Amino acid sequence: MAGTDIIGDIHGNLAALQRLLASLGYDGSDAYRHPQARSLVFLGDLVDRGPASLEVAELVLDLTRRGRAVCVMGNHEYNLVRWRRGEGPPKQSNGPTIADVEARPDRWAPVLTWMASLPLSVRLPFARVLHAVWHPACADALRGPLGAWPGEEPVELLSPFAPRGRLPLEALTDGVDLPHEILIKGYERRVATPFLDNDGKLRDAIRVTWWADEMWAQPRTVFGHYWNIPPVAGEHEALAPPFASGHPDLRNWHTRLAGLVPDEGRYPVGRERRICVDYNGVTLVSERACVGAYRWPENEVAWACAPKSSASVR
Image (cartoon, rainbow, N blue to C red; front, side, top):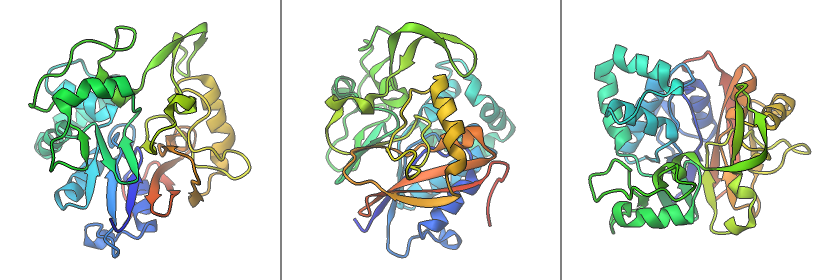
């Protein structure tokens, strides 16, 4: 492989994505071809929150059709597809996107069909890639019905909507979540002391910061989903967030450090094997949207920011 850039959660922020791709050498005037024939991998959560969900999804779909990119399924795509198929109620976070689907059904139709086909994980020579967490027990439960066949590389686990086989219905953690949902959304553990989350809701469970557990010392895993910010030298040099999503400590951490993040940057990864490139921690607390990437063989993270109100950059 000439080189690979693994792009984290975009959430409809097309301008930040375009700025990042330009900074990595992709030619926007030539359908984002890279002069060194580098490839792109997208970690899902293309849609919701930002001003250009459809345009981001159409761009990534076009790149996959051209053979220049692979995309895995995020929880926002999963929830949107379930709503479209009548398999679940609309999620609040999908609300504006659902309104846009209903306003522009012809443009959204091929995008939603494609989203339903997105795999759960891919395996590259240098890393495993998926949206939220590589949970071994859940992955083992899915290998039978969703394991890729020879010739389907780099896909490792197929879409949960794939017609091949039937998904196991038993839950593997606390009788709540199905195995594929854990890989897409993460999982929670009970806490001794309930707490108020960022939305003022009292919670007695917290999303697990699985990367902090030494049991996960396995091949390099690149993921999104967990509201990280880019490394800031001398302040935050880890490659994954120090607090669980939804906990006030994480919001306070974002607020304290997001302003120190430059509009563009790169940072060496070193020997770290758990790398979270969801940089929406910056987007959450500032007027800038931030999109990040893990780059191989450079073994570094990169990011770019743009105003959240911008639909695109020409």
